[in-house]
Image (cartoon, rainbow, N blue to C red; front, side):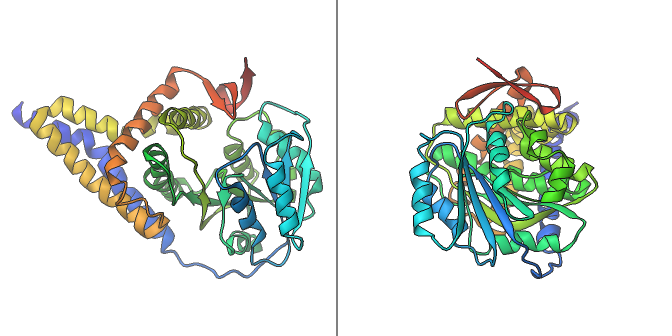
Length: 379
């Protein structure tokens, strides 16, 4: 019994420990694969749905105007003529007269996902056959379009999506959320790529062929879903096309926020993932470090439990540091390494809370998430 008691805390952390090492191996294989240099630059339309102001909105938008790319169009879509982002967009049009920029102001509603409604309203203005959907809080470098669009030289590629990171944060709450990209999102994508290939898209940046978008029913097919990015990528995959992951990191620009606001957003993501991929979401609980740490402390007592937790975080901290410094190059670690246990605790709490309800908040609205990922607005 003494031997079993000594082993239990280390058995508790084993799944999280093994998973951390697997993410590092998967990332090494992905980022060190043989890469084909860009050989194609098809004309591109970038659709930018906008609601309100984000941190650094003008600089975010301007980064898309500074692309080293021969032919591209930028279409902004807002629903209200009183939207506070409109002066920023008009300033952009004035300061970049050589860039093909269009602005659509249209309040027509087709379903509960108002972001997709904006895309539906903007789409008729799109001139080109490669369509990029990019969130309003995203900032990119001059080589973004070249890096993303070169994959379309292969006609089997239907969609290209991009990894994202946050390099600058204001306050500990924002750092906790940004750490999620470094120690959860990117590692999880690496493992998914290794185990099953890419079957989903990441909403920060998605490039899709016009004819492929038409085959899956257009943006109208996504308007009833909360996870429109997952639905877009998965429908393209199920239509028989290959999805490509660009290792060009786009930048998600964060503002200073409260822990409460960040927790609400994390819960929305968790409940979205739970209804979109229920089996995989449930299984992910096995690798939650905070849950593993709690079990280790309960089963091993103070001495053995603490030893197991220290071992877990020695490995997890090292893996996170490698992701941050070598792959994402986000500058978050080691500066915010001390926040890693708090990040893990938030992840475990929101993972568990996702099973306790089906309501989420998004952009000031309340929704009920239904089985399969559909949603309906609630008062």
